[in-house]
Image (cartoon, rainbow, N blue to C red; front, side):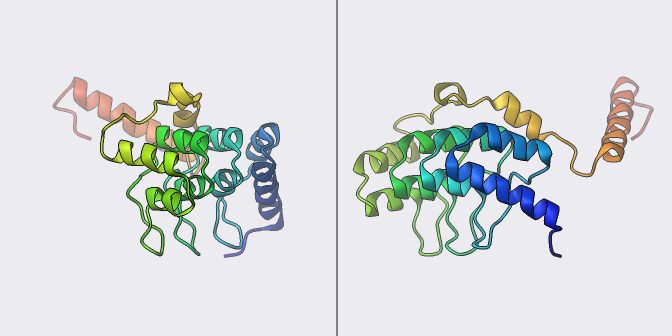
Amino acid sequence: MAQNFTQQALNERLFIAADLDDVPAIKQALKDGADVDARNDRQSTPLDRAAWSGHTDAAKALLEAGAEVNTSNGATQSTALHWAAWKGNTVAARALLAAGADLALKDKDGNTPIDKARSQKHPELANYLQSIANSTIKRPTPKEVGLDMNKRNAALAKPIVGEHTAKVVTGMEAQRQAALNDPSEGI
């Protein structure tokens, strides 16, 4: 199913903003209805583009808006962490790790983000990622990298279908609470 022009234009604005590290434009595009996990013709997401471009502020804004951190693009099966590692962007890699990026995911060639950092001659980043993978050091916390997880959690909790779904879920939650308070009431 093809996107309508308006949605496509909104998503394109989001990609451009991610490419330019323009956080206010990212927030505006998302407010206007752009899809935080939109795909371009190469099946990349705005988060991929921000990580590729080394735009840590854009990556953080997208993560706070609920961008899926472990999604891979269609062409290379690379995640945003692969791109950050390939470019040697330690700051973006730390933000992605704090948001839950998976170090074990492999691209279409079987490479992990650690492999990407090594192959592109970023030994400090490769060693850092390897230390996290080996549990020698802890992952960075969202607070350490300036990532507002309250915003991310709120974005992830938004109803997908709309107001009707929220009412149904609220009604189901009320039934569940009633059952917990009175075991004779079933759900």
